[in-house]
Image 1 (cartoon, rainbow, N blue to C red):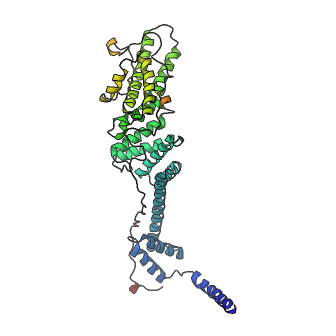
Image 2 (cartoon, rainbow, N blue to C red):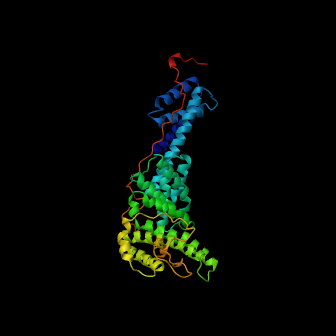
Image 3 (cartoon, rainbow, N blue to C red):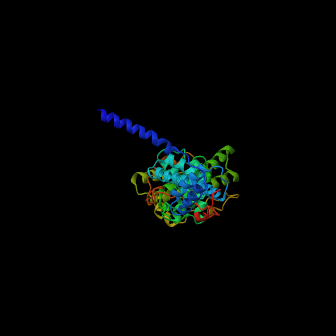
Length: 389
């Protein structure tokens, strides 16, 4: 027992004596500057972690030094810290995205692209995370993703990397589709050009029925609703050339809506999705033509026809030959209540395409810090020729 107590006391005494030597401050001597700078210089390219520690030792020991040595070390330390922080954030973004933690992926992605505005993958992952969150019921992230999707499109078109997509075309199609989807609720008319762009790019997305259901909804809730409201506000009680012209413009939009729903019906393979689309299509088609004659033939042949552009507003009545089915009376064909979005398939019920965000199997790899290259970099003086002050 006594021996144990003596050993314990001895160990404590040795520890006390060790503290001053361990905590002793380094002296900012010429020898220290020379050796520490040489250590940094020799490791600054291939072993940056060692070089960074040498730079920090030098700068903390000699804080008042304003020599060329200190200047080079400060530049390196600043660049290394920025690169390390950037790499950490990028790895976190990948981790959140792969774990389908969409909200954190969007939040971290914004930090990443703030630090590195030209990081195309960051912009893409933000938009994919926001879209995937919306398919899970959280649409709050989607509107804010528009700016990042636009930036991603610009960078991809300029030749930047398009990962995690498998091709440039796939990336551009999905980014345009996501912008349109983000606009669909509050600005449906503005969403139409983006859906049309997405559908005209040669990618798997053009075979996805959700794209065309969204396009039909945009036509219904955008220009069709607007034109119908304007027609009703006029309060026509008898048919006039003005009422006929307004009806002709409304019918142009309904024809595009029917075309989009027919494409969705033709592409849908899931029985539940197909039924929902066909129900919406049948209702809209009957509003327009007053019958279902030719509907099945339309669905069977629509994919062989080019996707129509947004209609150009008519300023004068078309000739009878140019009107596929004239609508008599003072009411426009159908009403805005025929909303295909009611039977809209779930966003993850895709056919012939790959769900956004899962378009490519991604493997998270550590992002290494960029090599810091302070310039100009003074070479260390030879210790043999070094003189003490």
